[in-house]
Image 1 (cartoon, rainbow, N blue to C red):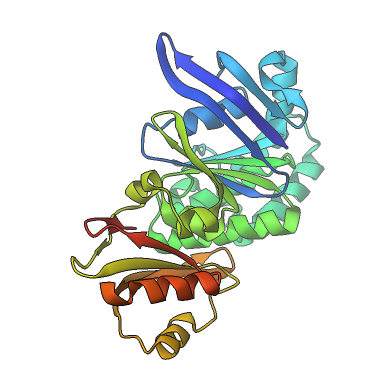
Image 2 (cartoon, one colour):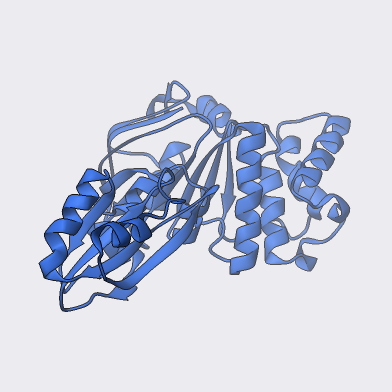
Length: 325
């Protein structure tokens, strides 16, 4: 669907993206993640030709973006809807008028516009708000209008630039559920730019993590967060202070192990006492996955590690002075 290869982007003499490569598959929700200034939004805008680039290539649905003329870019953007952090709605138009606007630009017959707009407002849960003024809507309702407008031209790809950053947690959850429903119902490919971990974990199949314009890591969301690299740990944050005595072991629970009583079985089989330092269960799309950090007496460490290896469990030994996400 989207192939990015060795992409380089600069503003004047200042490089902002360094040799970025990734593949976004048709029908998936793909996250582009990182701190402010990491280059996320710049990369997103390169996908639909709003930003040019100096090296590498971006191929979207078989077309090299940099080689498209004005008409080619117009057609590409028709197939790539976009929603924004601050909604970008027109205050002088009501809800219906905002959703209808792209259809009017493409000179769609009025009756088809009416049918399509009402269909989209039903999809995003605003069927009864068609004549409302934008000023009278909540933040979540405004973003739902933005989603409906982005879908007006039946795009194959939806680009989301910090689409939930201006929303409270509960409203964010409702928008994410809407996007996930659209993805599953329409088979729409969604590219999410965000700095919010709850967004990535909730709906993204895979992610690309950027820092200072460079790739830190990429892969399946649950794999990266269950066994994160050090750079990703720093991004997520430090939640647990590890015990200074004994050995701290982080046990990961992917979907195939999440429901098993691993810790209880290990304690019984080894006649082992241990301390629980911390842990977390997170929602990854439709699964509840996570990890547990235990502290083991150094005299029992070898038997514990042997047990974990024999059972083919996912684990890592942690440094005493390290903090975990």
